[in-house]
Each structure stands twice: as structure tokens, then as C-alpha cells.
Length: 162
Image 1 (cartoon, rainbow, N blue to C red):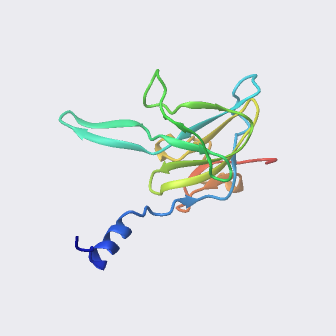
Image 2 (cartoon, rainbow, N blue to C red; image 1 turned 60 degrees about the horizontal axis):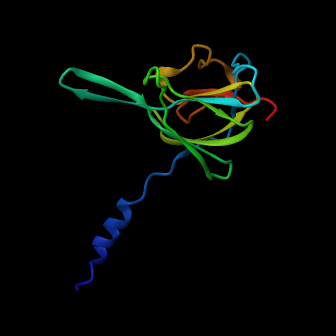
């Protein structure tokens, strides 16, 4: 059997690597108004990137992309199917024990991102990685209380007392 050429090996090796995700270092936490009810666990809601698909009837909007919840060290805790049974276009609300997590998800205009989040008891932490889901309260002029992607897009509230 003939050995593959070095050029072929180089092509194969370079094609198998994915671009590095955008790593956000500021921790996102719940807003002061984000209540999850009277419960010990907190919750996470991620507006991850949505895809548009065209068909004979025109464009179709697909659900928010799935994402991973990981430990701060990057070990996977769970993969989230990011839609609700009632409405596939709404992101899932995921109950989580209070603490820090690392979210690996797709963001519009930024590709894969890794965002540290803080889950607090009885509160909902929300990530806005798809500009279509950005809260009106999470505006570009919200100052230092907002965590942003490198392109300046606001994605969540800066965690307080992390």
C-alpha cells in the first residue's frame, strides 16, 4: 500500500480543526428582575443562534440551537435541546443548582462562544446570543452592568456578588 503524500496529510489535518470559540471572561448572572419562583434551584435561559431555512413556501425559522452546560473547568454537565414543547421557537428554561457554569453555545455573528454564568437560587440567568431575542432592557447604553461579545453586542447582565 502506498503511503499518502505529505500534501494530502496536511490538507486532511487542517480540515479537521474547528475555529477556536470566542471566550468571554466576565460572568453573566440574573438581572434584578429575573425571578424563577420560590425554589432552591435557579434557572438558565439561552437565546442561542437561530437558523433560517428556505423551502418552497419561503424562509422557515428554526428553533434556537442546542448548547452545552459545563463545569467551570469545561466538563460537560448536560446538552440542552433548546426549545419548549409548547413553542419550538422559544428557548428552554433549564433548572440548575446554584453555582457557576460554563455555557458553550452558538452566537449570531460570533460563531461558537464560551460564557461563564452564575446561577442563583430562585432566579433566572438569561443569555442573549441571538440579537433577535435581546431584551429591550439590555441595551447598548446599559454601561458596565452588561456583558458583551467582542463586536459590542450585549449578551447578559454582569453577575453581582459572584
